[in-house]
Image (cartoon, rainbow, N blue to C red):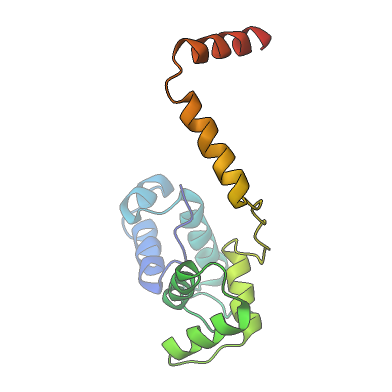
Length: 158
């Protein structure tokens, strides 16, 4: 089963109630609540040991960006993939009611697999080279049997 996120207090209470009141098995509760058997087992064991249903306070600072803000940031990046971090941060801050640092933007983009890369330079096609290529294409335009021979010779080499 894929990771479904944090269980709400209501779901935790429902799990304990199904286990204690109606004597359902872990698998039956998992099917009813649509959560994994391991999550059900963890909630029930914690209730039996500590008589607590609610989650404990997590250590660390909560994230400044919500999932919705992160999606907005990704949309900003996808508009212009060549934008640098500072203008992106400025544009993103203008679209939000909160203000975030460029480091927060960078960290969020890294979490989604966006890293700074330098675009590869394309080889220069000069006017002379364009003319040569066009002439070659015009000469080869009507080839039929010749291309068949080229393909057959190449397939024999492989």
